[in-house]
Length: 186
Length: 186
Image (tube, rainbow over all chains, first blue to last red; front, side):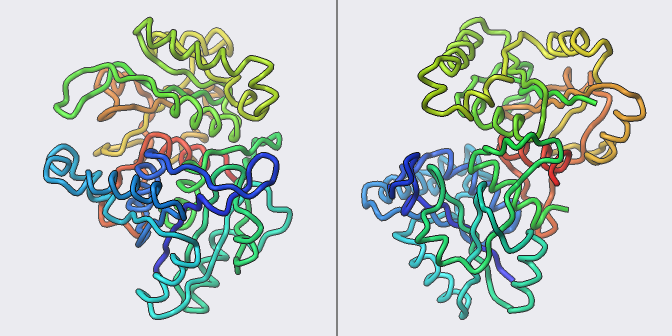
């Protein structure tokens, strides 16, 4: 089955638990595209409803479509080829449904889930059993808003360490890399 | 055994294979500190011989030692507490030898090793057997220079995907996260 990934900039919780829209960052585009491309993710969606932020994403992605960029770093062009901007998580889900001919299983990630549905192995097993594509959702800011968590059919278990004293404050770029390695690393 | 990690900015290969010094970046300090702290790495060394670059690292780290920074984000302060700047890989090795009372096993990572010594499990087994701390070295730019590879006692196998068509161009931040999860994730 095909896996897709979305980095959500809205609706997001801020430090006070309020609903906010976070800013797109250049490095989230690059790092996460490279991780997605390495581990065979079909498309990487940057979710933001703000037109100027989508323009920024397009400007960065368009830069890397040029011959100059290709001559400088063809591997980077290759990775960024799978990235795109979209308005909402629902739009990403709809686009995948159109590509795949069936609704994707919506899986969410978070560092502070009190309850969750299972590991990356469990998620793959479920997607295989139901024969459906998967969209993995990652939050920015202080995490995915409850509205998005309510859409989820599968909550992935948080990343913890065998050496841990409880600290688990990874960057979203690191969390993406780890989940993709757990899913598709060998 | 204790694990340490170093991000090397010199000596590094550029695109043409020449020896260069890369720039320290703010995000490499933050993301890699957070990954190290999550997975129980004892210290994270930013290796650069350039005084102005070390000043920059100190300025960023000092900012996060303030009470204001602590009030804003205590978890970030906690993570950055383990980061420090040093002049060379040899200096990091010497500092670890002083802390631990024995020389660390030097392990290197890279995306393009034609030959390597084993997996993260093999590295842990060897460190346990020899009862030595470990320093994991990560390159920036186009990778660690041969001078550094020649210092290594252990080359880790590159990160590849079961879904791979051969593309493996992860950011160093992502590679650090994956190796630490493979070593100490549960």
